Image (cartoon, rainbow, N blue to C red):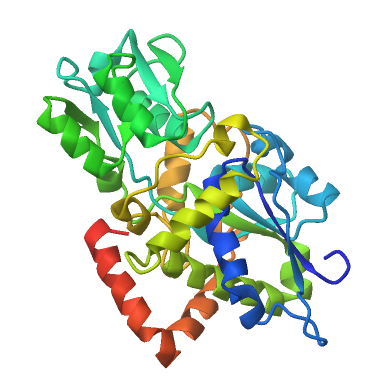
Length: 346
């Protein structure tokens, strides 16, 4: 902690990642859940700039948190923390952020399977992104060489661009949301892999991380943060009730980015897109066993992997979720979200 305030910062430069934490701030969830001082001022600070250049978090996250005195890091890839813990970093996974891979990988009519992608172009949002990571796993399972058998094409984050790239023949495979996949299937395209079906227990794509020091010294503040974050997960996915607010929030957040791509105002997300955001309603990250097995298959576990129980500390988020579920005034909202969870499977 710096100056007695809980310091919270994003790992990644993607501005969408800041929507839940900004919503929690603007809706006063952090303050109401206890992150305030005796005189009534804020007991937390939100940093807005990403801590490390994209793709380098595996090497730099712990040092970045030290230099910036960050107590809680948002949107960290789960594999990053296992790597860091193996090297002695005092970091722990305390909750989930993105806990499912939601996109469907689609190819044009002449591509029937992943094996057909040999010698072809594969679209990704960015190098070392979640989508890049996800399809690498599937291609290796299909027996392809990631270095020799495919050409990687960076398309950008916007899912509409991925759909357009498939239609225009710029790539032979790209990830799109399920509802875009339905449009493409109607045009004769093929689903090559549907990751959501492969991970019924969830997949910890990105997680919330804290230092061991803040867990030991101020677990009350961490728990207050987690209550507010889980409430924000509910708020972001509560559609159509909060659609206008979330749409405008993302627009405002994007306009604060110095990156020209992120700064560009995009077409509003659909109600389905927001309701299907993979923010876990209970705040938990899950599926670590399968994630580590796939990392091993990719040849990424070239270090002594620490036991999951020594990396993942989710007792506080469990308590936070239990606290929220015990509040009568939140029951109507939670029941709406349970229906959305049943619709999407997460």
